[in-house]
Every structure is written in structure tokens, then in C-alpha cells.
Image 1 (cartoon, rainbow, N blue to C red):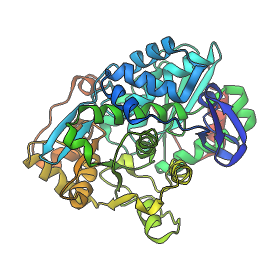
Image 2 (image 1 turned 60 degrees about the horizontal axis):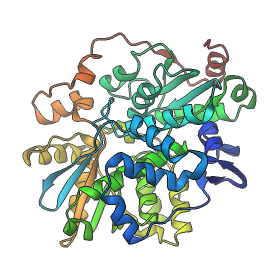
Image 3 (image 1 turned 90 degrees about the horizontal axis):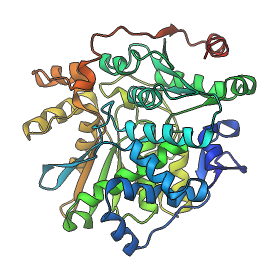
Image 4 (image 1 turned 30 degrees about the horizontal axis):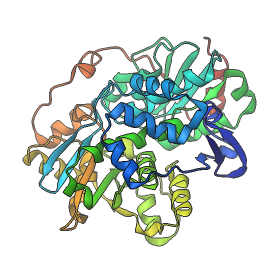
Length: 429
């Protein structure tokens, strides 16, 4: 597999290099040189396979002979040990539940496949994973890499801006997992990660890598559950399928668009955002004008400068699609609260991120279409928020209940790169 740096097309790397580097020169994202295509008959055959076997074939279509078919099957089997079921919500709307993994969020798919792939391609090198999280990435990455040999993980997150249970899931592990609460917002955490990658001395000394959705292995893994969703739909539902994606850093939507480039016949996508609406405004005005990030009930989407947007623009350019044809919608906290209540009245328990995707989908779905919205996190991960909206208690799944009373092990740090650099340089194995 060959990939090129979106900021410097002359930098071309293999899949193994891209997984280990994370970012290219000038903080550029890696993107596949070739986008594999399946014919309609090949898509039909894929849809008849089980989730793991199908996913291994999809990933091998991108990665090629860098990982053998047998090894790919093993990696995917180790990573995808949980389902991604489609549940019916209304006659013309369903939800793809992506929260049945160990940290109850969609990022378990990408995080666990990246961990498996990195161990596969890095041999015995010592690697430091440095990543930023707006909520769910931290837990997924921490659990995916927990206790893996020769890999340590450092996770930055905005202090006080993720839910208490999100924090408990990954800040109570210890061992090779190190967590730092930054006194700022997610975009600051992301900027600190990027600055670290620009420091060649730091990068070389600690074997720096990232597990954000900027890492191509995570993104490729996410393509697989779009095929899994399609496989579960009735023939009539497949004909006019619209998928609404709750969008923060835009990795999930990027993966869905890549599934479409491969031949999966999805009619259209909708990018559903909260008040951090840089992309919807850009699509309307043609001006990229990020505002200051604001805190919302859907904190995992509190991103005003989404990292994956250049990949989406590249997809539209490569496929000669019209960017303005991408569906979009912005939902306020008040509207997302109302959507949580509306879904509850229909017998479906959701949380603000999924509810945002539902709200925009319900508002924009046409009479002949079938809609899916992505359920990206278990409602219990936002227990306090959902209970306040609905006025009733939510039981904690075992994965959360066992960590709810554990002591946080995080360091607290100012927005100070010199301090972070010193911490990383002196972190012992």
C-alpha cells in the first residue's frame, strides 16, 4: 500500500511506515494513492460474508501484501470481538450501534485494529503513542494498547470538558497508560500533539506515534462497519440509503465516504454537528473560518478545526464529486436534548451525539429514502447528562460500573509545550 502526504505529495510511504509515523512532514495527513474499487457483484459477495471475514477482505484491498491474508484475518478477529448491530427506531430510520466494544464507543473498532496493526508492523521497536481525546478516543486507545509490550500511551484531554465516566474509563488504568488533563480545550490538546510531532529530537528519542483518527489504520478500520450496516438492511432499505454521521473530528464521515468510493451504494451522507459548526458554515460560504471551540452536551464533537477535513476534500477531488452536495446540519444543545426525549418516547435510549445525527436525519430524510444514524457511544457514558434530560436513572453497564469509584491517575498540566516536552523526554519505560 502506498500513501502520500496531503501537504507534500512527494512524501510517499508504505502502510507500515504510515502506521508508525502517524503524520507526515508539515503535519500532513497520509492518504491512499490507490482507492480500491469493488464491482456490484463483488459487493454482493462481500455482503454475504461474516463481519470479520468481510472486514479482512476490505482492509486487504487497501493494504495489499504488506500483511498476509492469514495475518489480516487474525488481526481483525482480535480487534473486532463485538458486534455492530442495526436497530430499528422508526419505519424509515434505524441506528447503527457502534458501542458494544470494551469502552462502549465506536472508537473501539479503530483503536483495537491500530493496536493489532502496530504490533504487527513495528516488530520489537519501542513506541510512544501520543494522542489527544475529546472523550472517547482516550478510552478506546488506552484499552486497545493496555499491557502491550514495547508500547506506552500518553493521552491528553481537556480538563473538566469530558464526562466523569469517560474520564474514569481510561484515567484509572496505570501501567503503560499515562493520562494528562490539560487546562484548556480539545483543540489545544490536539495542537500540543501536533507540536510534539514537529519536534524531531523528541520524535526520535521516544519513538513518537499517534492514535488519533489522523492515523490511517484507525480510519481504514472504520470503513468496515459501514459495510456491516449495509449487510443487515433489507433490499428495499438499501436502495435509497442515507447515513447521518455525528461529526467532530470528521474521521467517521471520512471512513463512510471511503466505503462509498469502494462501491458501497450509499445514496448520500449527512454531516451532523453541534454548535462547533466550522464545516457546515464552510460548505455554505466557501470560507474556512473556525470559531473558538465552545463546550456542548455532545463534548466528543467539540472540535472547531477538524483534522480529517483535508481527507474529505481529497476524496471529493479524486472522485470528482461536488463538495456542496454533502448533506449537513447544525443542532443546538436545546435541540439535542429534545431529540433525546423524542427518541426515548419512541422507545429508543440515546445520548446527545447520536441524537444530533438523528435530528438532522429526521429533518432532511425524503419520502422514498431509508435513513441510518450512527450511535457512537453508549448512553451510560453520558449518564448525568441523559438522566438530567429524561428525568430518570440509567443503569451502568459492567464496563463502567467497575471503574466508577476508582481513583484518577492523571497529571494536570497547563497549555505549555515545554512542560509537556520535558515530561515526555523523562518518562521512564
